[in-house]
Amino acid sequence: MSKTTNSRSRRSPAGVAFVTVAVFLAVLVLLGSRLQNGKDPVIGSKAVATVPVVHKTVVVRRKIVKLVRDLPPLPAKTASASSGSGGSSSAASSSGSGSAQSTYSAPQQTVTTAPAPAPAPATSAS
Image (cartoon, rainbow, N blue to C red; front, side, top):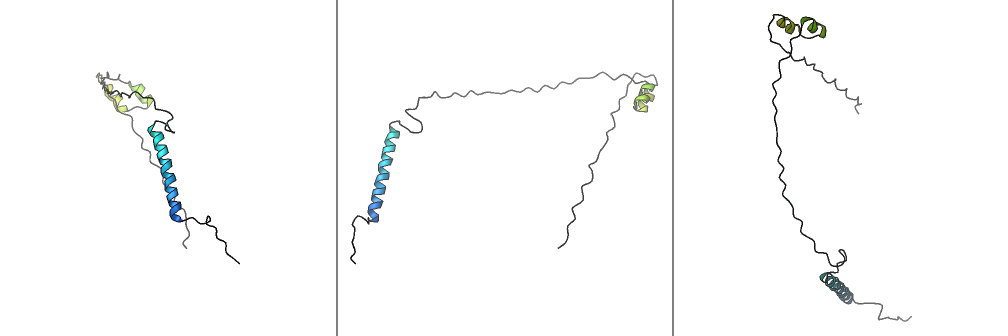
């Protein structure tokens, strides 16, 4: 059997690299010249000159107004009103002396505690 050799079937690696680099540079020059002429494919034709945005400096001034009011004293409770409403009996007894002073006691605060945590789940020791 005789071997037939085709000269076109094998190309040298250096020739392929040279052609690849040449095509890359040609495309790069073409696209660079288009960008230089203002034909950017992303923006479109020449960009319209935009007016620079002027940012105004805004100073926010917040006023804190504290209003202090002196409230007039509460009217004295009578003995029947305080015992019927569940109020303190000491206020009723002190106001019963005939003085014009009124006493006020803050309501008692009830303290509630959180429930106990749930027990940990049982695990079997292996």
